[in-house]
Image (tube, one colour):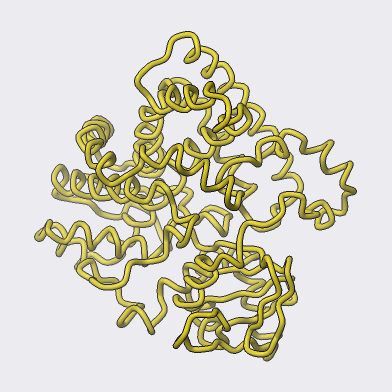
Length: 425
């Protein structure tokens, strides 16, 4: 790919063999089998072509260096919020806006914005997620983890009882969302996350719109209460910023809080679930980590690499870009296969080997560039604390599912388990 970076190897774009790669992409994007186990398909796509124009309507890259380039280069971004998504659902613009008016009003979170608005909003909340701030939160993460583990005895489904509860509690306390509200909002946040998937079915979009409305109404009530009586939490800080008048509008406040709350536990939930499954499926590495806790940081990085909580990210081309003689027009979509990049043998030695002591390049699980995950330090800290406390507390941690593997949720962008029965003793 021509990136304007001197010395960078050019990446060829190929349209052949179209059937093979498109078949693999269709399996990953559209079938339960492909979503459940995409890695062999990723490898075939990654090694077949550095960039591939799919008949599904986008250009896809899967090598580490190329994914980094797309996510970092300013010529790619989130794109025009008025992009005609309604065409993909057979609706007119008026029908779309009438049906999803609430969604349209809540697309002002930093996740979907480009500079300068993205820069302005991210700056307002970034200080709450710096490594130093997160390290100061570690005692609270330990306290919340121990409280959850105190109830573990025998077989426990880790997903609802730990993987979901812990990050929801951590981000809920940071924002100042009461515990009762967190539990009530959780299923709605999960439903609203469907909008992050590629072309979710219309019924999922309807459910997401309804869920978003419920979340927004809860937040409106909570914001009103914080205006009347501010407390020492992130929500009160953001309200104060909004009241200054020119940095954060009310709609941006709602969208930002929704994003922080949802992203604050969806990604970490999947890190805990996917990570514990990986350790259970590699018992020698679990024993190795139990016997040498100095490996905890590298182990969490390996868990992120091995089965990333976020598998795919997308960008829109802002200007015509030349890809080894093939023009990609402004407005075309590029898809980065993060899960494939994390197993690129050009970057990771013996990438199909799970190794809790692996050192080297960081995985791409939190993205790259200006949209690098704001909560990466927090997710890493929660993962380190969870696995440390599990190993401290339970001499026995073993699979408790009957046969096969635990099922993954029917999602592609956010990769996580439906359930994970584990025996603790």
